[in-house]
Image (cartoon, rainbow, N blue to C red; front, side):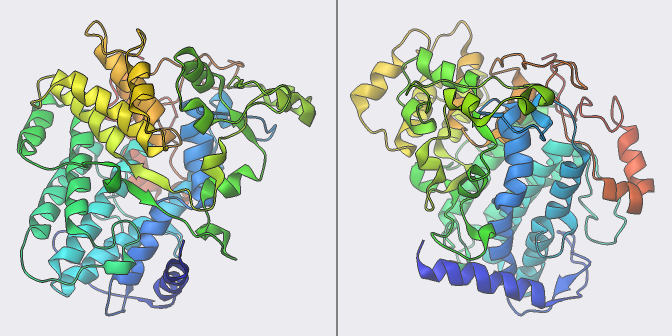
Length: 494
């Protein structure tokens, strides 16, 4: 990354931390209790983008040790980690919560809410809209992990009320719709420019992201609220979605930095040597001669073969192995641990698979097979696989070729492959659809008996400081504050 990005990260972070003060509520987006007195929202927005894209601390705890292990992209080899056997980890859940809501220099939901507030106070509808979109993305990600969370009054006090997930989704649909309308205003508002680490203030790309996010959310609730799904997708009928890999929502990290939070999180985490590539993803790629195999994994040190590690080793069992034991398993693909390899929040490939499902179910016009094939191609292209003959050969294999006998299984399985390293989104789709079909964990003696968790536990901080409001949210959960309780849209027997 160029030096100007290094300066932006560092300076913006310092500004955001140093200049915190107070401000008043505003009408449509709840204002943070602790707000900024800066004259520009740019520094806060930069920080919200960088932190919300998951620097290594939260990436390891949320994305890797939960999402990526749950969805069997990677398997745990460390005897001191327990989420790979589906045991809850209250400490990690608490730390994730802090990085989203309450830890002053990192709380990305706080920062982006305040950035939108400042932009509104300046009557800059383009900056306000872009901040709204990122805020919607982060809140959707958060509510899908926990269920009911503080939302409408999240930063109005130290003890905010919790909103129902359904209400959060409905408001996020409105927030995104409003944001798009603001970005379509032709007045010459100043955009974020270089402070926007994702799209450099490109309004068209933010509109496409917003529309794709609404599509994702509409399908997410389709099993419990189909009328709302149809309403939202009908509104999107003539909209532009993410159109190519050039529109991918990604964070390009710094090439070098004294601050490890500014580096590619997978590069940092890989240095700990605590995981191997999972058996499921390796088997899936090998079975279908998928050219992404050599991208996603490195051959095992032992014999040069691609071999995945089973998920869910007993922690006592792991403690009995020396390092040579793990040489038989593939390590993470070299591309993912390069300094300038980005991490992705939303991609063209995912959008194609969303459109494939929407058109298959009659919610959206178009040919589901064409969208499905384009999603596979987009995923290949994203990793530098551009040989159309090679891609077509892969698509025409019997196990891959679009088949109307069970198209949802195919669509979601291919989406799972394309979402490599975005386990949180894959986990949400697995809970919604039952796909991909996961291998049983090796040790089924954990707290869930080998059943895939459905959510994260609430933060222990909330029990100490916001118990009355938390208890109301817990009361709406089927099994209490338990990782097997289901969030609102998760009603499938899978």
